[in-house]
Each structure stands twice: as structure tokens, then as C-alpha cells.
Image (cartoon, rainbow, N blue to C red; front, top):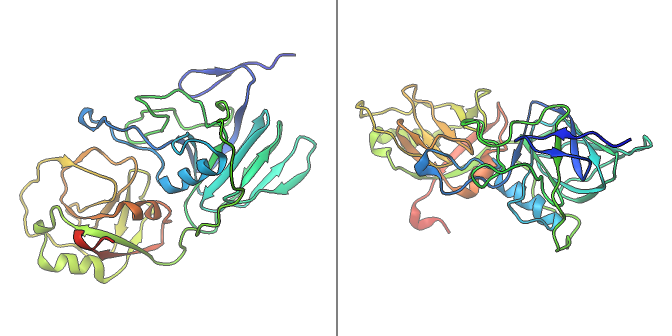
Length: 312
């Protein structure tokens, strides 16, 4: 009997080619690539993987273009079944991962390694012991429809494919011509203690008292549960403003530390709004935004200020 077609995000269908069938999603699973670029003037943010380095690594392991679409899994819980023989890689937060083949045999799956997922096999991810977001890449990339040049799910605007749910079939594109050249990448795992992030003061640090920048770096901030792909809400030392007038909305970037009237900063992440009206006291360096995206609620963050001339 022929296999029935399955709906995929964006309205496409897969009649039975290579694909991942989603059985469970955990707290949140989304399709992500490196984001949609060049649309900020239209009010469309970049979005893309919160930990861009982890997605790039997974794709490089498989010989994919670095921007190929994969799955971003928050706090584990994903379960998928292979339609066709697939080659995969897991990066980011390390989850206990178990593969069960079509005959019921089970084996563990390596992290930051090239792994085969045979036709009919099921992959199940547990909860990571540290870190927040795990990335699952498939050789060939997830071939869901692109929106404005990207397959990323933007949780703020709703652009891109809707988050997968049980029963979603995600088609996989044709494998690239180049072959993987390594089978394991021994890169550091996300930190599980205090996380140190480096930031440049401004552009609105003059809206704060002289002691505010000192306060920002004096004591750690705690990541609160009210954090998501849009931004990380922090709890810690109060940042006192000296200007009380209203700031016209201005452009925002990932890593911006916005300070609302509460005096508690919010660190903007992948799905941040394109503009904002709260003053930004400092901006976290791009190389540290990926590390920030792996911080879990309850984890502590310390900020260290650097000047533009001392970034090397």
C-alpha cells in the first residue's frame, strides 16, 4: 500500500521521500536556519538559531551549507522517526539520545558526531543536564517552504513554518555533493556555572547614573523563567536612570541590554523586535550571544565591559 501524503509546515506535502516524522516535541521545538537578512526596514527581524554557532557546527559536520535548516530543541523531549535512511548530527546542549531501530534494538547516539538514522528508526532526546537548546541537523537540511528567504520560525512575528507538532512530517532535501570530513567535533559544552558575557557600553549609557554601569558588572544577574527566544529577562542589581523623558523607538540588535522602568535589564535574543523604546545601556558582543542563548532559568550571568578598541 502506498504511503499517504503528510502535511508539512507551510502547506507542502511529502509523498514518502526522505523526511523526519515528529512524534513528540518537548517544551518547544522550532525549525531554524541562520535567519532572514535584509528586511529590517520592513519591520521583519532576522530570527534564526538562538545559538548560531551550534547550528553551524551541526551543518559543517554533515557537509551541509552552514545555513541549512535544522531543528532547535528547548530542554529536550524531541522524538522523531526517519522516513528513508538519514545522516544526522546533534550539537548545542548535550541530551541523552537513544536510537531505536525498526526491529526494536536500542543504542545511544553521540553528541557533536555524525550518526546514521536508518529508515524506520526512532530518535528520542532526554533533558540536557546543562545548557538549554539542542540542535538536530540532517544531511540535506530540512526542506520546508522558505518565507522571505528563510526557513526560520520567528516566534515574535509568526513568520516562517509553525512549530512542529506530533504528526508533522518534515521533508529532507537532497544530500550535498561534499561529504563529511570528520565524525566528531570536540568543542566545549555550554557552561553550567556563572556565565561571563562581554559587552560594549552604550549607545544610551548616558541615560543612566554613573553608578549604573558599575552596578551592571558588580554583581551577577539571575536568568528568570520569563525568558524565551525574544529576550532573556534578568533579575539583579537595579540600574538607575537619570533621564526620565521618553526615548523614540530606535533599531535593536541581538545582544542589546534594554532597561525598562523596573531597572532590571532584558538581553535581546534571536526573535527580538526590530525597534524598541527602552534605553540600551550596553550591547553584548556577538560571539557571546550564542553562549547567552544556552543559559537556563536560575543560572547566573556576570557582565564584563570592554571598549571597542580592546576587542582583540
